[in-house]
Every structure is written in C-alpha cells, then in structure tokens.
Length: 99
Image (tube, rainbow, N blue to C red; front, top):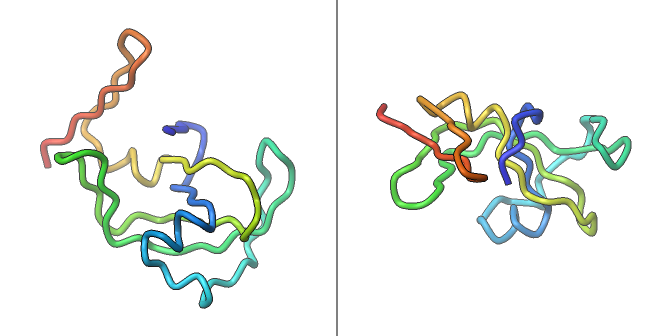
C-alpha cells in the first residue's frame, strides 16, 4: 500500500523476516504515532525496494513493527522520494522512474 502521509517504508515483522532482515538484531526503541495509536518501531535502511520489474529504490529508510502486530506494509515518502512521478489516475497510482 502506498501512504503519502507516511515518512518511511513500514514493514510488519513477518514481512521483514521473510525479506531476510535479521529480526533478532532489531531494536524497537523508536516511538511513533500511528492511526492505531502509539507504537515502538525499529528503524533500518533497506538496500533495495522493488515494485514490479522496473521500479527500484535503493538505500531506503524503513521501519519494522514488533512481532504479532497486525499492521499493513506501507510504501512511504522514503520510497516515493526516489520516484520521478506518482500520478493518481482511475483509482490507481502510476509510478514513474527514469533515474
């Protein structure tokens, strides 16, 4: 899900683990206010975020939620800042990247 109001890419614990992130090394010490209330997250830098075959962002600031919380994965501004254009058209967001 794309969230233009989110500063970072947000991964739930299970997605982070499936992506190969060393979840045992994460420190959940950064408090953030979410729509669900206050939450402590672990901040990380993800080397590559890929959406489909052509959209690739490098060295993206991200956060991981603690295990067991039911949070959606979000693509926030730390990802969107690497796009050249994001256009909403017919209920879809079209990402363009030429860099």
